[in-house]
Image (cartoon, rainbow, N blue to C red):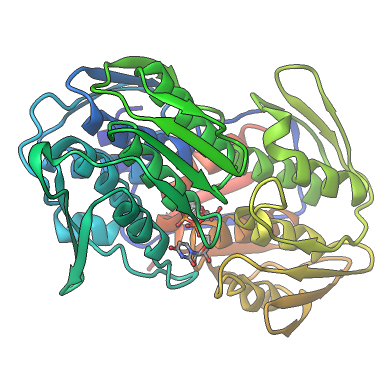
Length: 433
Ligand code: EPZ
């Protein structure tokens, strides 16, 4: 579907109306990873050649990132699930406020702009529903590579002093394994003069995917997926043709759709190593999961309580905390869920309680006592993954659940209702009165 067609689906104040209590069966296809595609798109600023990305999901966040890159002078052409990005004529090093403010991922341009242009003016991405989302580690790391960075009036001004405006390799130790900071600093270091070592780096699969593309473009990157990434800068990077990994968070959400409806489903493609902690917890909860080299098959009958603690990869992913809580709200027994990554990512608890979930809060921990049935109700998706959690809860609830905040869902899930309806769900997109 073209981006225009995707946009045409966005009706004012869209809602999803879900008739719950239906079993699902069949096979679901996982789209390309949003949190990989967004950062891979930014690499087009590092080369004059064309970067061709395949398996790019048709999401509003991808559209937004394309608009931001175009505003800097890149050519962005979409052909189905292929994006062709060419950065041979970068005309600006200043990202527009309104584009960065509406899409945090736009901040990914600061590293490549500094590497390519020797300067960058990028508005602070600001906080969102789940937390303040600081960029302290990104700024600290860029300074360690020789950039002069100031923050005035909400804008990050970075410049590389001296002749040639070329960053210098250096040693960076991240105070926290920030995914965005790791990716920003990788893109800054690949054209720097000398060697860069990033310690306490994020190990997420999306970081490894970025390293794969940079290496395909001629960069020298070692250690992605481990806590220490070493990069030796090169003079220039060429284009590449690269496929985005499957979206592990969408895959986990679809596995949870099977589990919460006590169904059997096949989810494909999936790279099991990207979902190790999630598969382990689903099996602990009573699901039977098998992998055939391409996809996962899940069988769910009785669901038992399990405890979750979100952690950086390879720990349990924060992005699946809310969807998994919906499942545990219907489990046998009491589960203890602790959100350790974001300071405000438990807003879905109040919405689940409206559906009859028995949850008690204590700081960043939720005590979820499973109930036999949730009951359908009008609920709000307060962020991307909370909206997905409400859709899952609606699949299992008695009666009709109406989920608002679907504009969040469209940012991270391609055609979720179409995919679920194709395996037996009853979901329709309506325009709220
Ligand atoms: C990425 O966000 C993802 N977004 C998030 O997915 C994901 O939840 C997050 O990583 C954690 O896995 C994209 O990749 C576009 P972080 P990012 O920097 O890079 C703190 C979704 O639903 N921190 O690893 O912004 C920060 O406050 C989204 O798809 C600092 O303290 O995450 C947070 O508590 C949501 N200082 C924690 O680290 C810093 O300088 C993780 O943040 C940077 C971050």
